[in-house]
Image (cartoon, rainbow, N blue to C red; front, top):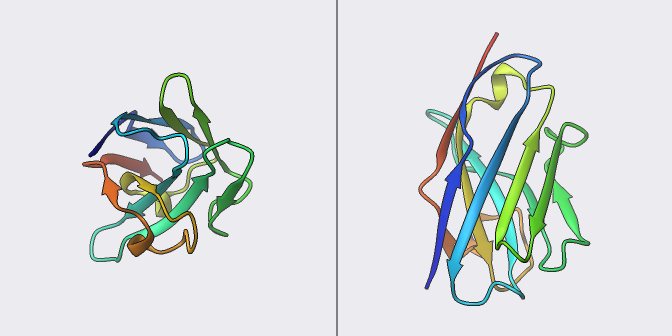
Length: 124
């Protein structure tokens, strides 16, 4: 069992920044890919970013490339999503997730544990 708890969401103006955190506990996370997804009202959950267990590999959705940065702190079992230059279309509930299989990372089916989500609202 893996428990994921997100924090750091909130209300921010367009062009601003937020940093999300995801604290993980439970089974060893050393071989797991960690990812962030988001879901806006009326839309499907979509991939945002992922990071390998070592932190050396990162992947991003085209819509956030160059604006968002994912990172992880192995000692703290925590994953971060630094979000800069936020746009109104970034408004969504952001979910942290973890994948054991470590492939097809853009799909929700590749992840076996999920957090409860944290709301990010960007006002224009």
